Image (cartoon, rainbow, N blue to C red; front, side, top):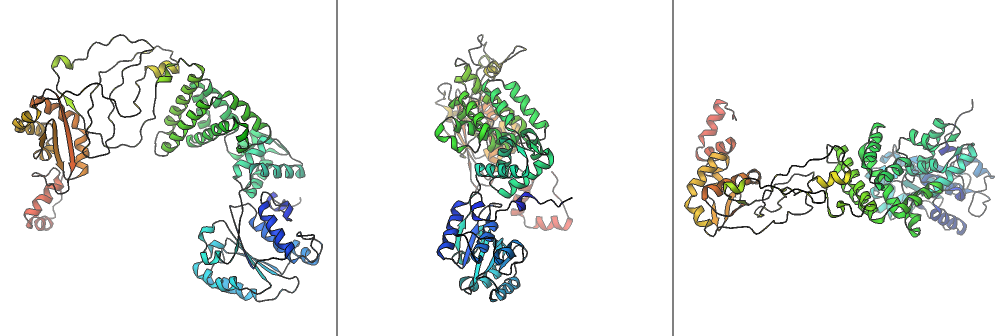
Length: 590
């Protein structure tokens, strides 16, 4: 059994012409060789697997060739044969990842002084040069700037930003690009022919996209796919062995969403989860698929899709069936979800909600009279922030009872419940009124339109006021007259807040208080609706009250609220208390 050689080594380019996707680099190097304008130091930088070390070896062989064909090596002279047989004494390779000390660089400098026995140049190729230590870089500076005439340095790195600027200034810098999918597919097709492997365009496209611009990664995946599938590569099997979602999944889900069929879309997503893929992976893939469909709608932007052959035609056909507004809306929903899914513990629910919203966009397209056109269903907020100040209004007992609701037809949306919105400023005021509770009944079989129509819609922005806010002209007078009753009511409802309200001030219908910490402010804000309703009743105000809370670290409550605060308050007045506590080894009990 003959030894197997991986494709990345077996088909490694040996000439400038065979390098894939780096024509701007190879053309410059060939011109420099033909004109005899060789620099003493080069820096090749770029992503992994794009040909940096390969081009360095081809360049080293070409400048030492005894009878070159233009800028290409002849592969027939003694210098070329020794290079091909890995016995050349003119080309030295150093791995800076494991030889990164000052002593390693000093040994290299000593080797630079030796004149080549055959050939014209001694070429020193240093891989992963960014991993040299700072001391090693400094020891290398002088030799790199003024090497012997026979020495040529080629430095290769994937992280140019980690190299000292003094090193960069002494080198000619060549930036290698990621290899395009089209170039990668063409090279894989060539290798498949050489190996006698049949492969469809979808399989090669999938391998190239998964490699993300690296030819070495693409060749490794190609070998893996051949090991799994044999001499015939088929798309479904290649997707299975590479553990990626196939294009058919996204095409099918998009068809269901276009038809407004959220049930089948959810079932397809469940199949994806059953196969072991994460919801975030599915979300990112679907978002990219919709982006490609949007790009495919215009012939001028069709080249922006990194697809070839029959797969590109499938994108073009499905793009014709998609409305631009639908694609924009779907991409917007998925992009918003992508920014929230990392923070959520219920990722599946968020993805399913997004799919249902996109299916609603599909229903709009198919049914312009759908009530979804006038409704907006924003995604739930995932970040909890303090609630705003609210307004409470005294109402007679008869007015507090829910009024009879008129019968609602399917075209009449249900009244939306009041939603507390976040308050970014400490003393912000915002009136909010509770809405009457609404009971929604549904039939056993409900379509997506009817379901979303019956559901109360969450407002996309701040709640719009439902009418003028009634205020009592004598609010300040009534509040001042019943100050003691208000404090008694607060002590009865929330004893912890009593200290904060002891110094409250009144300005019209506004109650102003100051608290020492933002934590106490947030705690009061969470209970302010109940408090204000009670204060309205006690004060006998015939209108609205508002609450303003300012955070002032200079404020010290007359009676501390927490046990820890009480201990600190007492310790300030009696310094012996802390000494007594330490002497008796007393602990604070809640």
